[in-house]
Image (cartoon, rainbow, N blue to C red):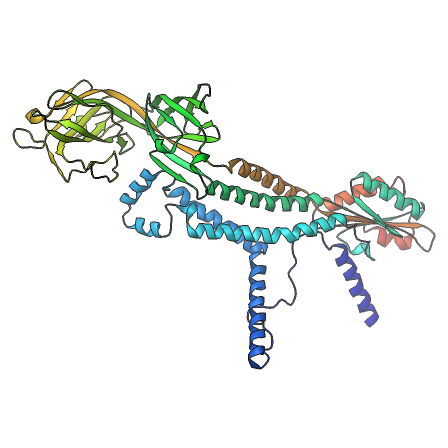
Length: 580
């Protein structure tokens, strides 16, 4: 009885050895220590306590490293990183559109302070996102390195020897033949090599293995994830991105002083800016005029002329929302559009104090705009220096029948410029930076009409606003379109794309390639016939393995034809056929 049990245990061990190293996934260690048992028995005295503390600390470090480098934790961290990108997509990011983020904060005064504390307005630079990112990077490195060395060892090794009882394997078939065992094994080896199996010949069997690309694809996928993480990190460290509002006819050169808003990575240097420039030739925007989609843009594109380098030839390009301009390694995205009223301001003595376009910021989807104009070089009718400020709205389509001064459509159907005026100190001489889109009237006085009411005018193109008391005039000359652009320079984009493609290839390999082993045994039985056995083993149960084994058996039988009439005593065994 004991001898029978020992034989069974040995057979199970043989089958286990045949299936070993079919994967590079680390096996769970049996009898692992758990937190609280690392130090073992504490010896008496101070030295015993110190030794125990050292063992306990070392055990904790090893335990934490095992947990961190396990595939389970890596998947959890990857899932957490994916969740972390959701607020970065739903909540306006300061690094992408500071104005939009500021407007969101004003509209959500209760949530904004909480979101600000946890970094939801700058997700990809937040502490918690960086922590997940670094832990995932470390986990992947710690998981991939040993698996890669293990896989290299498997490639250098040889297929395992055949188990004692091939009939216990998941896929199995057998028959008797009159061919010699040596002839059968030689034909089997030749057949398996022709099917691109790696083979190993033993005394009575041929061992073979195939499907290494499955593990190669698995490792390629994880290495590609590391490449993507490195590319993302390099893009954040060396990136630069900024925004610029450009009125039609004006240009932009990629220098730091040209940006309205600019942010960069911690390792970025000003000299790293790509040399290029462009001019906004015009903007074309058309909108749906009826139905539920009324006001939705149909044509939304900026026409530019750009140059790469100082002496580059001028080239034309149309920039659309999802079609950026790529110049000298940077990308220029179209992110907004509006209108700039063109005005001429004359002072109290009739001299021109300001002339040009006044970019205005949109307040709603119909491009109702907030308009601010600061005139610092101004003299009143007596020649005394003073300063003027104009504040109001530009309305592309005004319809007074609605009872509101808001625009009813984003196109220039009935444009009006609605302004009031102030005089006094603009605060521009204090040395403190100011926004050109905001007017501080704390040290200014609003002009009044003769009846004492606040002075304001509604102007169409060609109208003139005459300020009270001979303080000057403002003439509405015309309208120019403007567009806002985001100029981004991220050096890791190409690497990230290569990593993404490699990850897809790796996933395809790990999903569609099956790692399997096939053994062919040929031995002579008591009747002098040769018993041929074919058996296969894969990483998991699959219908393809029995099919492949059946195909191999059919291809081998011309060299080892089955006997026409099997012995009755053997019919039970031969009836097993191929099975899974």
